[in-house]
Length: 211
Image (cartoon, rainbow, N blue to C red; front, top):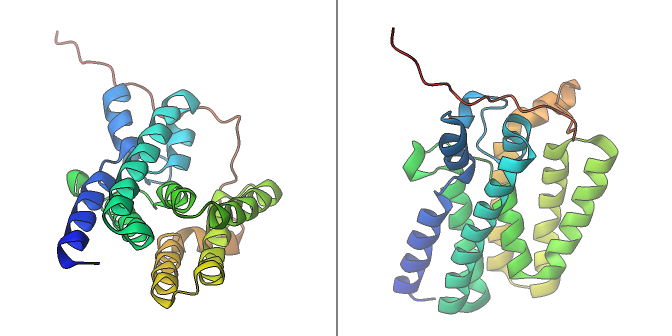
């Protein structure tokens, strides 16, 4: 990979990743900041819990598209390694969005998009474990952590490339670090369990009428 290609991939992916659609959708639809509600996280799970399913669909589509765009650019410029580098910087942008005060989500959905585009085998193994863990515990955070832990092993198994494996280890370390508060709540038995029946917490701000 040339330095020019690396800089193009890193910069474009970070800027795309910084498009936090949980924040964008919440502001456009409800005139509120999603980071002031629920877990305070601008991610898919908190979007569902606080805005409801219909608005979360737009968040889902937006985050998938930005991941697809970034990884596609990375792949065109430098193949599989380019895809992986793009994925790293999309996640960095998602977690630390330059447009929104560097306060974003935890990058799980974007990371899943990266895996699906990078290698479907790695993605399938991770997503199957995620579904099993979430079905058994209803803890999205635990499922995300367990799924992420499989990636360095499957990456090395399929590619035998120490650089790619090292990048995967770094991403997993970031996932665990970003979920550190969730881990504490899991250990204490206080982590919120996912439910399809919860009601949206955010209501559209009504305009003030001057008297």
